[in-house]
Length: 238
Image (tube, rainbow, N blue to C red; front, side):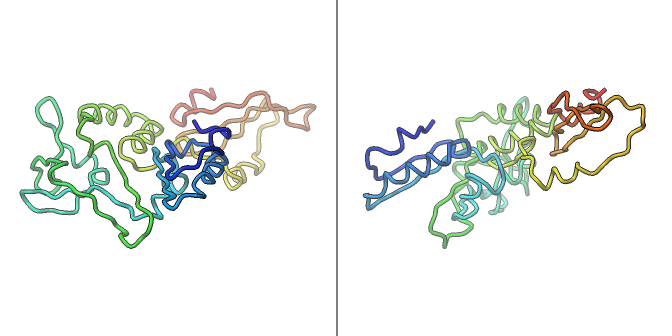
């Protein structure tokens, strides 16, 4: 964690920001002043991408966008980016799993047959996407076990895609915006006998529900606010 007191002292040649998507952005701005006297002034950013188009993903989109490209030694297919092909790039191997060429299904050695390739080599800022699939010390059995569990719910799949495949996915973390709220302010007819009313803002696999009753028959009095998984919405409201 980066605190204000840590960001304004000791001149540096290089700054390393870890977990950029959860760092205090104001403190990051203060920290950059520590590079003011350096001829190098290098900044390195690391993070699990949590929201597409913001944070570390925004930086990556403006960078060289390097990906780990794998070439099959058997059929010669040379355009395989494993995180973009998952789960088709994985096949059963007895009781376990193996990475395979999507074209000919032969087993591939991700380290020996892969290399970094920049999709935008002309850009000044270097950016790398590092999925767990290309890290030898992370068990493929572990990854596939996480994937099987993630398939049960959209929110779990979002976390899997972000942390394992390095493909930012907001999932249930989608923010409530003014545009979203504008969809739920229209009046909705209720029977005269209704003791309470419910309003909800659906944000993918999560619904933010507000429970209210009528105070003196004119004003809404909110009695409960709750976040509910979309697949349990009817059960929870009942």
